[in-house]
Image 1 (cartoon, rainbow, N blue to C red):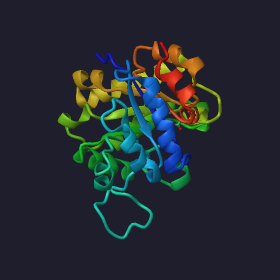
Image 2 (cartoon, rainbow, N blue to C red):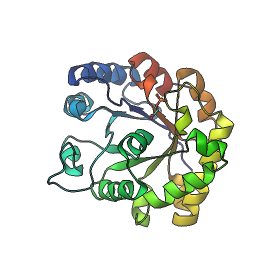
Image 3 (tube, rainbow, N blue to C red):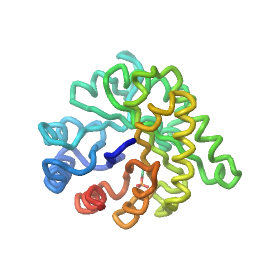
Length: 251
Ligand code: PGA
């Protein structure tokens, strides 16, 4: 069973390198030396190095928002796993719905990234979730099952427990509409059953499944009370130290 929650801040395309330093410093100060949850900050690529220096020797970890599966080469605008690792990146968000819908990323492409991230000792935060149309059509669980299975294809049993899943209903991202704890829990529980089917009950029960989509200080505690919700991936509310720290210290 997982005891420790994980709260990750996805800054998206916000904060310059200098602004990132100041936000990270404030978050580190508020989190203290021994935060009661794991905390990960995911700045844009251009702020990774400056934020990495702030996080040196701290409990708060560094994540990237994306990564290319190839080692190097003619991939204009892309960043490799090795480039991230040399900046002490420990986590990487993969398959975020904005990558899927705005940049056309497919499950197969995301799967390649997951495999490469693991091979470079980074923990993928694999995002899955249905659109409003899919929810209305009653296909939520089928969509999530397809994404989980396709994106984790080929992941070895000894690596699977380092994968973090983030269930983010697309209709709840940046809209202010959070899934109720019950709605989120239903999908989280289902995700865990799919993971158990493929990777065994023991592995699946130790894998963190985060919820994402309009997480705020006011709704965090109720979401975190659910059995299969092991943390949160926070977008908008991670851009201010005060609100993000309230989420981190939600108890
Ligand atoms: P939000 O974003 O908290 O602003 O809804 C969450 C995410 O996209 O990861």
